[in-house]
Length: 401
Image: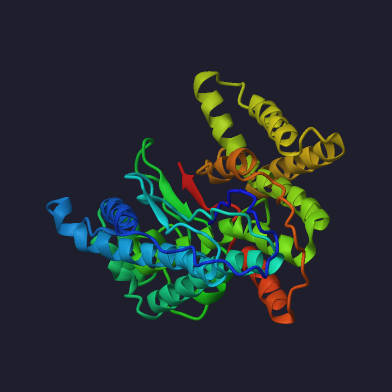
């Protein structure tokens, strides 16, 4: 993911010869390396809780190698993605920082990694190359990780390595296969975590045996890291603002058409956000004010209207239809497909919706030189848009209470 800053250079000619700009100092390299090390430690620590063999471990220290494997795989994806951007920027002599890895001792141990492009990109060819290099590089690494994980899967008895899976273990010991349906949580405080499937993950999994169900997948470091790689690739390929997908689609179709697609895409993202937010609000309200759970619909409708007004710059020709369609899709999915408002999710799409509006912005700033892309670039660009569809998950993480 890259975030340009727009400092207009003195020379506007894209062919103007300029001195090489990317020559990081020893201190800069050390600073970025230390951030990487801190992120590796955080992902290793948190990874223990996801992939650690808890059944026979006497302490967390015994499980650190499993967490380290997960950290190495996830950071291999993140590093490859960001260095794809970095080396493309270096190739085009665009001033750019080294990747900043962001350690967080929660969730999966990191908020990802970013680079900062420190000058205006003049033309769409450079914009395209820098934007597409990261997702393509990271996507290839994710596929390699997944294929290796699928091809080296242990038999279902592997689940015996994890504590708290008694019902699944009993089913595996009796039948040799995983249960088709996720087991009910063993207490009211507990919840079964389910990872959302994607078209590409499901397609790849169909060629292999012993593939764990999505409610056990996160115990398999190669599968979990590969799945996260696909999902983060999809997030970055969202065709909005200055995300990688925004750079790519802007270069393909130009400013005005991208503006339209970006606003429609944002409506789609907020519909996914509603699928998460409405059950979360419903369950929270029911806990405190039994019988008033359906007021969650009104609360989300008002929050969504606020987001639309901010994101669309109060352009009511867009706000009204996109707001209405987003609500219809969210409520229709929950009512007709799920059948209730009580399936709680992770709120990933809610956070992403606010992030897009307040940090990324929906519309891509105009580029000075809009050039026709070569046929090869166009093919790669549309393939990357297809990857976005294949890797996106409407419900990335949700819980069975």
